[in-house]
Image (cartoon, rainbow, N blue to C red; front, side, top):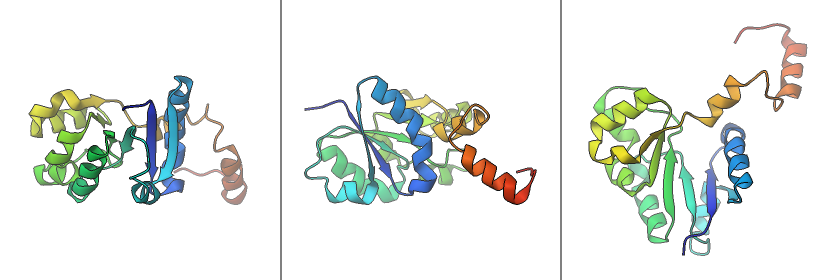
Length: 166
């Protein structure tokens, strides 16, 4: 039985967590249960975790067995590729997005129309699964002046280094 649960599998907390928090906040406001868990721990407990939606960050070929197992356990799978599809060589695209894995996805979220069009070109039969959404980590950067999350870090950097250009 499907329930309103979304699992966020985190591999590197420092790099991934902040960008997922706005998404989690939106889902919680819609009464959807959200779970943040390390990918390793989630996979080790797969037999006792109730089915839900799992947000993946990669569906490359090294994830075939994991994805097959998650589907077998009744999970719905979606992916927001962590790297984005900005390259044009077919082999690189097919390394990042494995066709067998794409078949198992409910949706694959693209960073922009360029990524969307590249994936539609290489995987036309899955075009209904491809959706342009952007990426939450760039939303944090885009709204940086409004965003108060990093104020203490910014003050510390300015104190140590003065004005700078990144």
